[in-house]
Image (cartoon, rainbow, N blue to C red; front, top):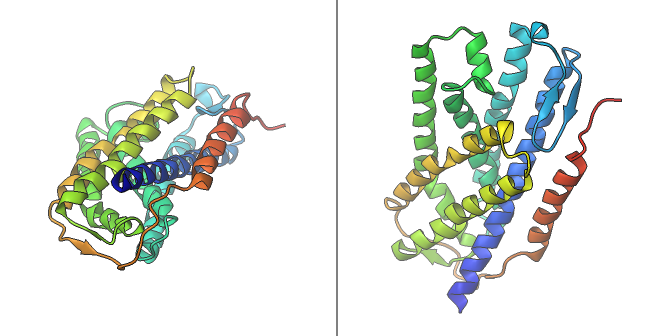
Length: 273
């Protein structure tokens, strides 16, 4: 019974933090896109599934394309670095709040690297930057290779970082517990969050939303190498005191409210007056 409570607490807390981190990144990323477009005085509407600019093809220029579609990946990279620094400074503490920064840096780097990866194949998002840069197929494939390599390193180098987050629930974590922690802290929360994000965008799950979900799906590659790294990390021992194996109702409530606000407020679209 105690083990089931611990698994449930890890799953709910991590899933809630995943949703909150993703919504923060998505909404703030859309704001970066809108602000970039406003520098060129482009009219727009902001919906829960995309930011729509109302301009003709002739109004696009090299500068506007590169800024609007290149600003968000750069923003994700910077935020990923900042989140990683914050997580590294807070991971030794046993509270669960550090998991927000854990997911924030994992998703930030995933969105940055996956946008390079997918942009190498299709003319969407960062792919527009590559196309307007007249990059040849060799250059695109180089972006794809670098992005794939980056996702592999993201997973492998994050393995030990993630295991340290187990100090919120375990006095120590050994080989037989690592796989369970991987499932309930990383893999299951990602799958649950991915499905919820897809459902919340109904009926607009195609077009840009589908593209966004593919980019987020790049995390699965990193997740494979997170699991691989777990195998090479020695047993970890934390503070020997009783751990609270309860999920946070306030955190779950906050994640639900954030999803509802995101959908309800942006459903009709926001446009400049």
